[in-house]
Image (cartoon, rainbow, N blue to C red; front, side, top):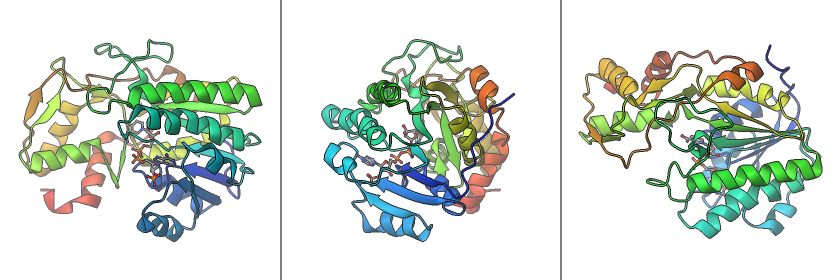
Length: 307
Ligand SMILES: NC(=O)c1ccc[n+]([C@@H]2O[C@H](COP(=O)([O-])OP(=O)(O)OC[C@H]3O[C@@H](n4cnc5c(N)ncnc54)[C@H](OP(=O)(O)O)[C@@H]3O)[C@@H](O)[C@H]2O)c1
């Protein structure tokens, strides 16, 4: 039996990383039913305008800056930490991703629950075996994003430390491949197919992941918050069905007539599918079939490519 979801309607919610691919639809959804505050650096006016047009309030702060975070309001019911930076500078990325969640949770220590979005990219590559929460961690994404996996691992550690110090009910969700009508990894693959560019894949195919549609991850957020404890719940978070890059590119090919050209290289990440046992126990199965999700994505973003 899944945990009971929290009721987020009317709640005061802080969402970090609101202008990113993953969190923007989350802001859009919750701003319709709750009092949403959106924190990012907001160096671009257009980003502020986008967030305000959705009915959320803008908070401009750099999570790497403890004084700036100490100056934000602290009285939120729920905190959803989606922010991430991948500048490639270790000092800054560790300060923003690792130190940042510490600054944030220290400031919002009275929250009823915190959801920290981590990544399946914290796991050491281990072929096709689905990664369980207790499996070894590693520098998985180094080849493309040098600071990413290390700073996501660091941010989990800081998150657990602060949660326990302050008794903040917290869930860490290790996200697989999020996608929806505003984009995702497979959309980039479609663009590469369109431009005749080779798509890097690991030679040890199939390259399996657990794509999760935006409808599913939005629906699961109240459950993830319901699973939060001060000892910190850590769970994988992806689609219930593993799907390979080869499969989703094949499906895009069926829908569009475009042909993928694969470049097999050990520089590619390598298969990274997750064990969903704990996730299913806590929050249940996901619902959107990946084939429908990808068709909807193309319909929304590039209807002209569909046959
Ligand atoms: N996208 C994926 O495929 C994927 C897969 C697995 C896990 N995840 C996780 O999902 C979350 C969202 O990812 P995403 O792809 O949507 O990220 P993204 O598109 O790169 O967006 C990052 C967001 O964080 C904000 N941000 C960056 N640095 C900041 C700082 N120093 N202080 C405050 N805000 C800052 C950015 O706004 P400003 O630049 O204005 O500050 C932006 O809103 C991340 O935690 C990521 O690790 C993503």
